[in-house]
Length: 382
Image (cartoon, rainbow, N blue to C red; front, side, top):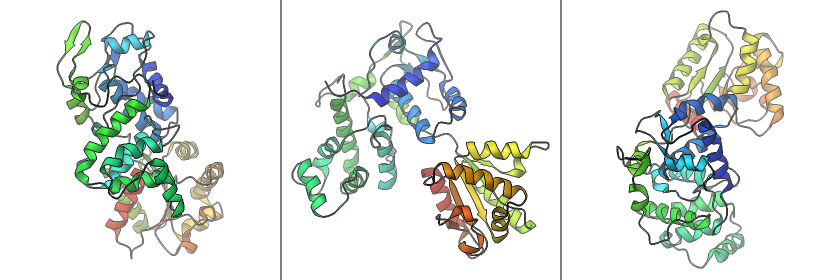
């Protein structure tokens, strides 16, 4: 018997709460639509939303739900899912990591980010694992790795190298052959099964039996889709991030540039909040107050004129500044606010509240396409 996976169970409990009015197998709802509607109201972070969606797919993978292969499917309780609501135990240790990580790209950084989101942060990751579990799983594939986990950690300390899990987890992954990554993920999945409770299979068992078993629903076999294939098709797609753009109206050229930037970011898949998209008659102060709270990212288009209005609390920029400053005071380390240096130097265009925050130069002299790509990656990944 392994240790209890409490984080997974917390997410599962939250997900099953949407089915509390169901009184028989086969009943359900448009679960993803409901989660997305409620998540913003509950002010859940993007990481929490990603984890909720991951656990939904994992519950499906383990036979608690049935759903068609569609982006926003009608999710139905299986007999197993209904029995859990009635008090049955929950399997919280079974995952096949290959189905949750996009291995089509050769970008190891991207693969690691996906993996870390599932196993990395203690108290947040649905399948958090300790250092020794990871080390033992990757050991057969790692080059120039000898000794046991304790020896490995001692060597890191002796060489004054970081012992942070996120650092050496990534370095070991980078050190194995690209073709070995699927096998490593398979072995790590088995290790997760051994780490947590209610282990259904031993190391030599065939995973296909788990995924190809028919799901019983209302005394009928659900055979429309192979669960393993559906998991591969349904990727975890995060909700659109809300991006608010704050700027000042200086001249037509500047305003046009800001609107062009907003259109490019919208094409990249973000929900852009900007004054020109608001309807006539809206109460602007209330709009700004709520936007500062709800936005995932706030882009500050910094110019000397913007700095003047912000520092001297002039016009709409001045009011936004008071809201932004209050939000920053709550957490000085947050990276919600991204300065975009549009005109002048950093000293000339940064409002006082930005301090020494890292900004992105997007002046006339800078390569717009390159800067735009960097901005998109930062908004998407952080």
